[in-house]
Length: 198
Image (cartoon, rainbow, N blue to C red):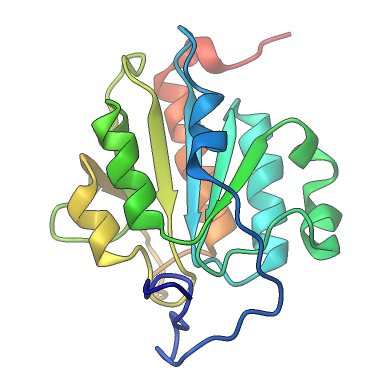
């Protein structure tokens, strides 16, 4: 699809994918919503396979005050019924946009001064408990990646900070929607003014 590997290869087997529905949504649409003075916290989902996980993440994102969701690569959008079934209407409160190439999107956000945080087990990663106890001074995007292969290495290279969730059991990772919930709660806990106490 137009010369890009992102969104055209399966993150599991690296085989070629085929477009069933092709819809172009310009990057300017998503970025234009964040030009105001208010700083925004957003999530980027790259190559998430499960529509149920996407819906669950949207619902959790709304609960923790995330303003927008960038849905990239093969990530299903709220145009699919399975996403809506688990989001329970959260897609009406967390705006979203689709982007085929997550790396290109993040490059453009960094040019505009955005902070990029990735959730991944990596040699650069710090425990999620080490998130700073302060408000984010810049618009910030939190990246969660494929359930199978994790966050794309190209996105990790662009990340300003990488965090992991320590685990005590035998499995190496949490379900992506659970991991996002832990990270979103940690961000809200460290930035207490984000929590609605009403």
